[in-house]
Length: 292
Image 1: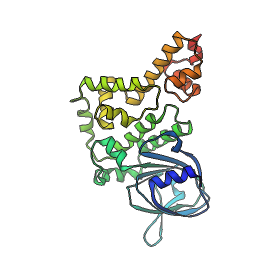
Image 2: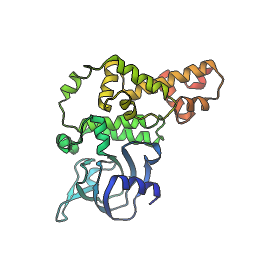
Image 3: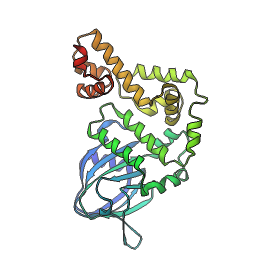
Image 4: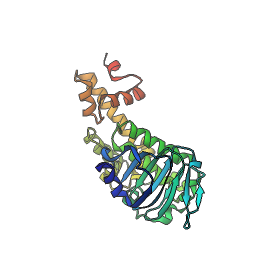
């Protein structure tokens, strides 16, 4: 097991015992500056069992068929999984295994990160209803797939996109009246806060931005920040940052002959390839085509 993988597991795991050949880690979030959360994408062997206890909130999404996975009760009896999704609160023991090789995605969310999202102390009871949906929730499964897609692509726009997706997962799991979320979304959110958040983003557009840092700049939780942007900008903070980066890139391309790789770095993209993908999606042309 590499030092990087071991570091991620030590941050998120209380203990884990494997009764199988070593797992193969295909992708992890370790080198992508995620704050308060981590993701592992791994390949399992033909069969194996595990016992684990995590200090983080853990979600597992199995990419293979659910019948290949099982849980173990206190006397060691196997119970086949009926869903690809499993959810485990912090410090709860899990026992299970698999009977066929496949891939899985594991998301670890630290309680402190959840507190920053919700703007209040972490309480497991707030997630009791959310734990019931692990028998099947297409929305969370799609969000887990989105996290994996962004990770495999190298997190081209930095940690902000992934943190926004994780925040959506947390809100989905929380036991809260959905009507109140929508009804109160635009209330008591002054325009001054929007301007302060926009100024913070503008001053750090070339850097890797984190959702909780933007929220802290205006003394809000990440959930309140997302409501604020959607109420006044009709988009998420991530979408706003992405469009501002594209607009900044357009300004530089239109007024200089700087290499596109330099422009990508100056506007917060990982490299020219990642800028090109976002540019084409929003503008309809590549940066090279736009420059002609």
